[in-house]
Image (cartoon, rainbow, N blue to C red; front, side):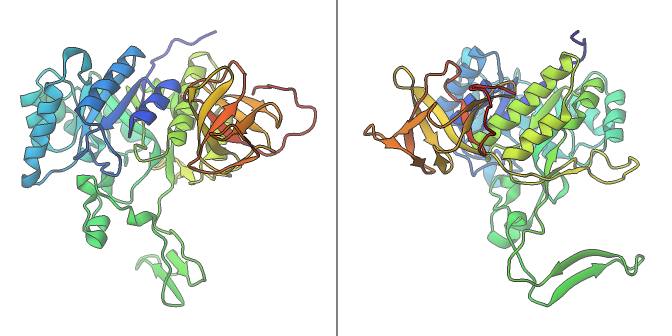
Length: 430
């Protein structure tokens, strides 16, 4: 029997219009996007005025809300650009207005209240809100939601929730983590003169390094003999600064029981395939929980099979008996190879190739609800623009997928899998 429980909003990244459409296809309740500047993700194309209006229209038609990011920390010379963005949003017609603004800087917050007094304001995680007094501060200023700092443990979250029962609380549950406090990093500015806090992070924590000495080992004064950090000299570079990805899918029941209003997936700069898989897993997990079942092993296996960055629980478990994050390694055995864009006739789908695609191996359609429909060689085909059959396709190609299965649809993904054991039924789903 379905359970009656608090249902949080699933909030997904929309770095461009394609990712917005994919988030809608795979079950997001809301999306967040940014303009062309001052949204902390200048590496994405962003949305200009017309694109915002179109994106809002498409999302609202699907019953999905849209939040606009202005969460950079502007300098004095950037204030004019902030005001231009707010004026642009204010000029949108009533049916194309965003459902909320995401801000971090107090000055931007004040300008948002001035230029868009009727638009809800959400406080970004960049504001590093880590206690109930800070939440109440923003609430008294007129904020309707606060994204809590990523450094909070489950005990901290419960205490804040109990202290501010009438405030919407949002939490990142999946995606990239940062070495710096709530993402306020200076590495990029120091190394490449590009400020992470203005949306221009070059992610030097993801770069690969190697020591010049034979080895580098560091121990702390009060812990002699206990090596905290060690890097050995070798032939290869290593990304030893790079944090794991956050993954809290296993703890969704806890988040629901403690009434966290919105669960946010990081990733406006990640691929469309990442958005599809993350939304599909978290949407299915939430829906499963409402139906009285929960399958964390399945969710973690799905994420681990197609993603290639190791995951852990971040700060969520700190203070528990283990006192450390729970880690899950990715095995990366299934590769997203195709993204269906549009139908070009009966059983013919214009498809963007995302990775090397071998038609001599089985594939599976990645369908919403964690449904995976297997297609063996011969049950589908690929053609180039001239209509020639292909046995291989390569990243960046546009090809025609020839498949008449009724589950084929726009924004569905195709995933390459290893050969299946003989005897598996055609079209079997998991």
